[in-house]
Amino acid sequence: MDIPKLVRLDDPILHRRSKPVDVSVIRQSWFQTELEMLISAMRHYRGVGLAAPQVGINRQIFVCGVNKNPRYPEAEDIPLQVYINPEIKDPSGEETILQEGCLSVPTLRADVPRSLKLTLFALDRDGQAVRVRAEGFLARIFQHECDHLAGHLFLERVRDLSTVTRSRIS
Ligand code: ZN
Picture 1: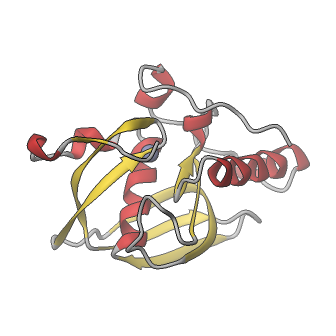
Picture 2 (picture 1 turned 30 degrees about the vertical axis):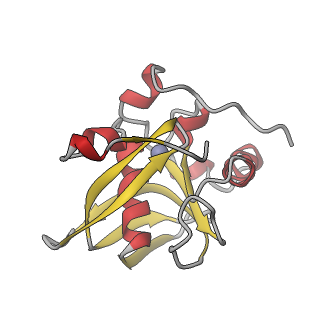
């Protein structure tokens, strides 16, 4: 499978809301192949998550999964997950701050405040509705990837610009 190129920070696709996926296409083979391609790309670029617009696909899809990632050595392992048309509900007012990065902005990292807990509503790769209660690092990934699908980058969430640093791992 060809690994797609990551789109760059200045690509307009990263700055607009992605289109919802029509439920009727989810079980079609071209769409399942697209999901596999997103998973392969996330692994190839060693991300903990990847949203479809990051590889130039204007659709509401993200994948995530963590297995001893050098960018986030403290993070717990998270099994592979695929979400379509995701929506975050009930984000907690309680926040957590962690240094975040992004495959679309490989040279920069910064402290980003995120809600500690939330509920994600989405469709899974079979088109079944799922509801996932998440906390901590997984909740952070969900917020980062849903931001991509809404056309926002983590840099827009940085409150303390003095925390912006050059990344050592790109
Ligand atoms: Zn990102």
